[in-house]
Length: 284
Image (cartoon, one colour):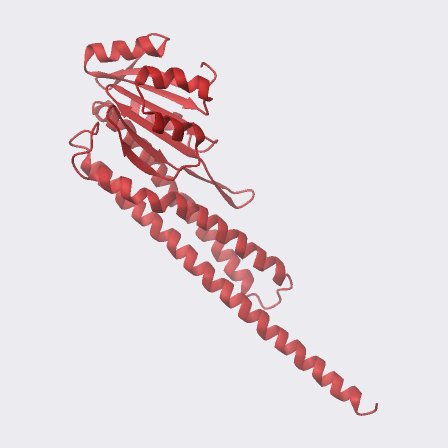
């Protein structure tokens, strides 16, 4: 378990306190005081490793199955003993101008938060440091962790969308460049780019409903005064999704323009061939 546990700590009155090394004892200690909660972070646990955690925290079997298999859509599920949220962080690779997605599962229950991360994207170390520097936010309990994680992932969506916008402008310039010779390569680049935008849409689109639900009232295990914070996250998500939609529409327009240019160029080539054929036919 030590290999997959990234961090494990008790937070009491908004402050981090080092509890027992065994997370079972740490959970009992957090529940005994009543004003504390345990946050345990895992990275790609195996089924055997996660069985210890799921048994101790009484996690629902269906949620455990989703957390282990990954490849889930963003969603929010409410169970008797916990709240289960799936998020898909997005990472932009500047070296290859590509987009990759990971998965982050968040379990919230009675005095505990369990985060399960798949992939190398969206490490939560920076989120922990930011929360630990804001004890007034951590006093809201496990809800503060869910908000901070969601806010960090959605804000990064906007940053990735801005990077993709720059790549799109460069591609647009290449398509309309008069002396362009690599037409086939340009078409392949547009298609590859469109697949990346589609992957981005799969991360942002389905997350709208869970964020809207968290922004409303009546969700179990969520602090009653957290609605304004989740509404802010929902607004940022809408902005990111609109940017992704705009990228997708522009890519379709660029691809149509590229195919039209290819057709015009082929017609010009055919005219030249026909003219030379006619000139050669006279002396023949």
